[in-house]
Length: 111
Image (cartoon, one colour):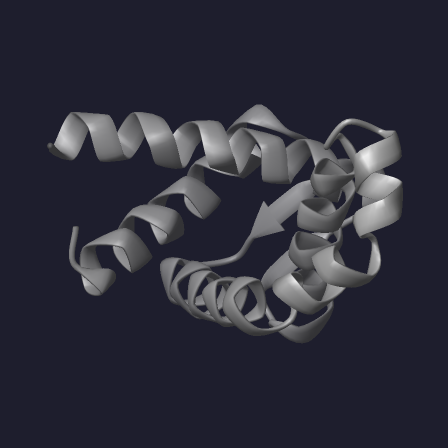
């Protein structure tokens, strides 16, 4: 799937999140587009480094610590992007799980 299509699908997923989870707010679709772009860049550049350094903890938790790292990425984007708000770290963890599910469902629907 082209990069722009995945970016738009993630932005749509970010727009749907507030309807499912109370701890996340998105003010506009433009904010969702920017948040999706920053989240993609953070996942490409920062996430691998964090996963490398937390590898022992990830092995001990049988990979479940990856949910915490994904939540941290979403929480970090909420701090950086104006118009995209994440109330708590727990909301970020649940939001990242829901965003993964939404992204997978939307990708299936598009194909």
